[in-house]
Figure (cartoon, rainbow, N blue to C red):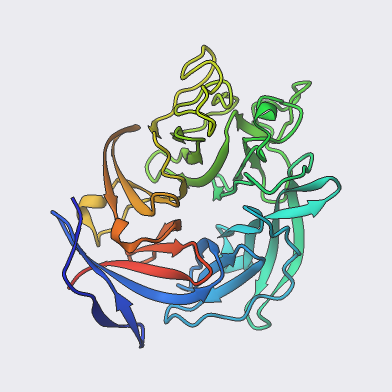
Length: 372
């Protein structure tokens, strides 16, 4: 059970004065330190080997934040985005070999014929010029469609260097079981956009070869398990039914035929919660917490968190810590509710601290520390 201490304290953070709220739990005293503020609806956060952070802003910018909290001007060379509703600049991640090639990858809502769709590009980050060079789009959701909902999208590199992309069904739930298009899927490609020969639908007529798994609704969180190397995802349900899944090649995760929770109208979703040939989630929330970013904790700053999965929540405005026993969720601790902020992304930093992004017009990067 988490309770807020009686007072706010001021701490010196990274060379500047920042306000930190201290939370007391049965296990820890936590201190929240604002590393950077004034960000416009920040969406994705990633760390470079230098300790710098890359942060995307939904309206279309990508910025670099130094370890001491200095925020760069928007990078030049960034492609235009469809910044409407849930669309805009989304996730970002460095190449696994960034130190050698300075490549980054980012997902965004891209406008085009008949509407918009999720796209992924890669580019070389030119720090001296504060811009992207050699931008190349390596994936485009097919086809584009009208509306401004359910773009996904997280980017995760597998251990073999291939890339997973999560995409939403664009609010077109009845098309999430159509194998000839890209709706509500995990996509699996090589870094140059080519298709791995091992993908489950390669060479299968009527299926798109880039698809890894399907039947997802709007997966906005994804992370690689640090021990098994398997991809885990978290996706939005409707009025209940947020899910954590471990997407396996070629498997169907059910939306909109099966789901937990109900439609916003109150009606039943599909046939209920189970159907033969469709996978069950590892964990679900009902009612919906509106989950977004996801990270496994492997650091030493919070020993009792080690091995947990952390999930940010938008509507419930909290950080969920899920305790695991193998691939089973065996407990949940809800934290930071007193902060009152929509938590868009969560990442473990290079020194074992946890960082979160708050989703607002004055968004922040906040570092979570043990209180000293």
